[in-house]
Image (cartoon, rainbow, N blue to C red):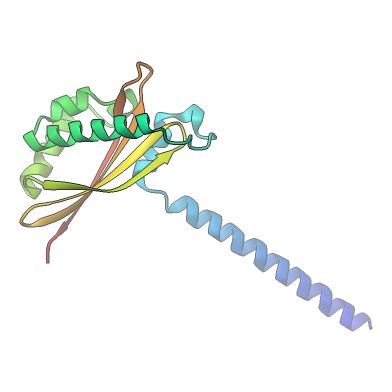
Length: 170
């Protein structure tokens, strides 16, 4: 009888340990799988990291889409200084305007002019930040671009993050 009790106890401990271990691995995987844009957006609203994403209003969605169209148009004509100047303060912490302009000029030179932006995603983040994902392409590359926007204190939607992933066409 004592032997059966010990086996049950050991089995219970092993089961609980494996259950707790599995949950912690899932939490760690979820933490490590966050996209770079989410990290950028999180740094733009450090005080609101604990808040849940607010419901997206039609006005917010329209403002974000207008801001994204503006940024994409500036990228198309190569006006990178205007993109930098119109972005939020947290975005500008990535470096100086000269560094930003040089990096995107270099990217444009190596990838070429990207055309035909198609919105393929929209999501809201905590702190009233929004991510729009676009697919763009040219003769050589397919590109996924994530633009993160946050509303400034003045009420304007400003660029808070930009991530571009280029793939050669096959």
